[in-house]
Length: 83
Image (tube, rainbow, N blue to C red; front, side):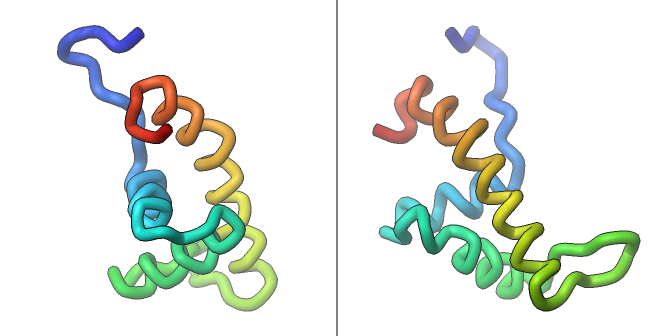
């Protein structure tokens, strides 16, 4: 149970994914939505200081979405943010 003066540990990627859900994006499309949101912000998934491309980029985006689904969505449901 959250206590006063505590903050939920949501990262910017969690909030971008949450926004996509709120805009009606199906969970299956979250990786693409996250990629578009990052691109619009001028950000890209990177490894060792180099932007990722192709299949490697897709794998990293899918991993980000998996973490969002497994960690953030249940917490948001417990907090009443998502139903």
